[in-house]
Image (cartoon, rainbow over all chains, first blue to last red; front, side, top):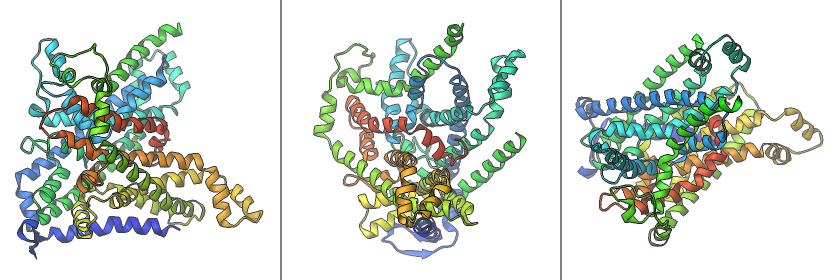
Length: 279
Length: 271
């Protein structure tokens, strides 16, 4: 009874990857009437020398680092705060996690047109009301803007996981520490953070899977621009393949994306497991 | 004393909650303004709320068509994923072989593959088969996309069921089919329901495959909303109304499925 799932997954994983690998060593552009021939590693070579490619790798890493850092820092702090009892906590918690369920294209346009728009946006109106010049977010700091809207979406996820993990915190130990005169910051730093090591590792891994492949949020806001300022690897492959119709080059990019994701995964897995051992 | 102790968490907790929710609240507020109020350079706080934008979106745009597609691919993809993963989870949980942990780990590892690495072949294959912009193709892709998560979740729910009960059923002369039908599925019904709920949420909000493989015919709501990103004329109020309609139902689903979300997306690392 296992075989339908296993074989379908195997096909879903292996076949497209094999075809991508095959295309990646061929000269194959849909613009040139589908004439294809073997050209070795030329696509890879071309890609690696392209400054746009390097830029895409850097952007991918910046998005990953920016969102991971902000969601983990604020996620742990929020979870710590929500460990205390206060009136209306259940409702407040629902409001905090709501952004996670907003679909990516709504998230993109909500921030681009309603919040960060330099003329109609809420932030612009707020800036004018206090007498500052509004910022053209997606024009001036496009990558930061993308990181902000992605953090808004993923912070609830980190928060929810940390909050769930807090339930297994040893209450007696906390109480003993506070009787010994530990302040709230000491509690957070020496008791809560170490307790959250494992969930932090889990959050890093899962967010990394999704953040390496960010697409819709870029597609619906900047379209990778201005220039290549917000083009990540996923968006680069998309634009090479489906906008410039260069199947060979896009496939080489796809293979590089797989290698890249695996390097990141191994790297993260190592540092996460080292942290776990230290705990 | 307790009241004073709760004051700081209360103020901070609610400030955070309102700040996080504010963009959504602002969107809902904008959706009941007129277009002129929505794009006024000074914030309009006091206004006569109107439902005109909702009526326009529902009556004059293709919103309902896209919403129908969203429902079809989300529920279809979920049904297919459940039909495939229940037998798989049953085999893994009750006919434990030495391969079970390895198989599960392999299934999860397929999620590490960036979807973009499959984009070109899938796109060309669907174009060749005439299945671009087709609901069937998107449904199958969504089912495969969620299969590792649904298999894992259902497996973990099945593992919580005491084996003695199934054995007792067998002693009473139940066939394997009856055993599955009347004992296993009955007892794990809440788990199965929440697995399906999580899968529906993930399908509903998926936007990589939908944006690349579908447009006007089979496009779900993610695609519909993206059409508002074109620069010709901003319709903030209508965009807000359409967006509110698009996220409303799934937000409620999400609130209901919080726990399963943690369990399903962390593959049990956090319960």
